[in-house]
Length: 186
Image (tube, rainbow, N blue to C red; front, side, top):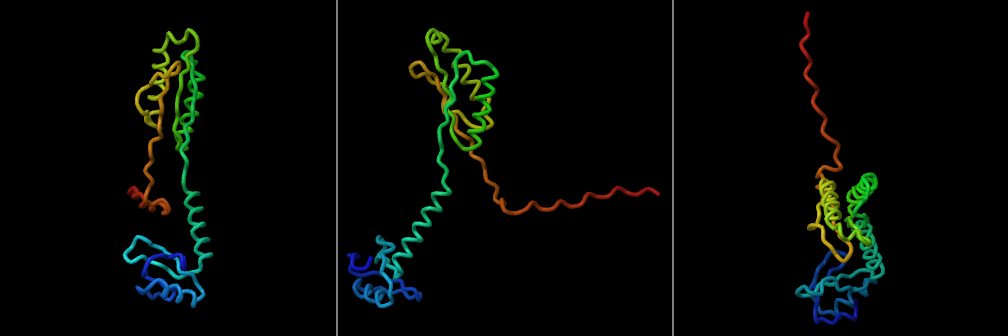
């Protein structure tokens, strides 16, 4: 900004629409005569582009743009569901419904089967449970790999399926043509 610009000459853009390639000190003086600051917009251009504008207003607009971008982003979280090798059907269905809701919200789901004590002898039951879980959630998400063992736990990670957004989201559907009338018998 202003005297902190260290390049020899700049492409100066002024509020009246004029664009000039001029030495930096001359461009700074011209901007200050207008009551504005000279701000370096594109330092990598040849020559660098500087714009004459109010620095406070420029900072305010940049801050607003960053806030808008932050509002629109969605942070993907990993939701974890824990099972045991002998989880009952009702409990399984209850957790499956939670997983469906998580996937529809756009979050990832990590299903974990914990083996405690002598349950470690039945690793095959835990693997079957995770495979069944991944198959039941196939319409909503895809499993990233097959179930894996880590210590006394087996887990599988399921990511949501990306939905295609319709291009005509804001437009109302086209009206249907009227159905043909049956012939009238006299």
